[in-house]
Length: 111
Length: 117
Image (cartoon, rainbow over all chains, first blue to last red; front, side, top):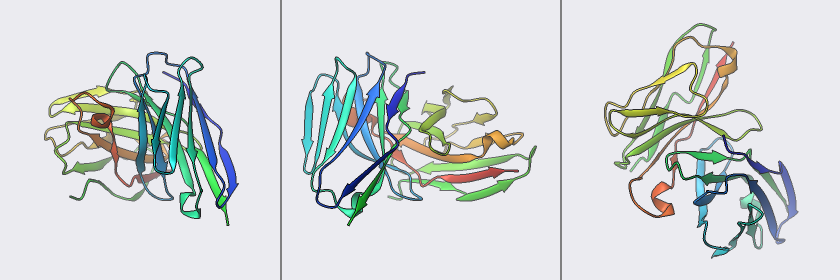
């Protein structure tokens, strides 16, 4: 299968920006997604980006895509304690029914 | 709309027992998926379905079976439970069938935590 990799942990102070990084191997990826998982809950879609875009902004969230390096990042501005969760990167390849998820980055926001 | 519902929330099985994890969605989505999430790992696709009567294997199908007799329901069956199947199981659905990234947005259920001892 495809490889999607993320660092496991990130700790920031409330009010700072958080940047969560993801790398993937499938150069034919069409869409890339960021999901958020709160404790004991399923995953919730935060945002997605089409592979022909470099950047997408949605309120406090900014997604950057470097297709040449196969690198995706999620920036959360003015991080709040409620942003503490696990963030998953996922990519959808040309086989449109299959998605590949990273192992998740646990974001800890300190007050 | 209730979204995606899964039952049970928790279950402990003995080795060799069988069980069915239930998944129902009320959004009239075409696509449904079963994933497992092992500790510290990402989600691995077990099986998926693009519509009633159609199912296909994902990355880790061994030891599992599925059926899709209706649009709403996508049960996952474990026939002979093994300790390696201890995991959290998530069901998801998506509209599918249309262009655009949001047609593939997956809506997840709350998960079933399964322990096999």
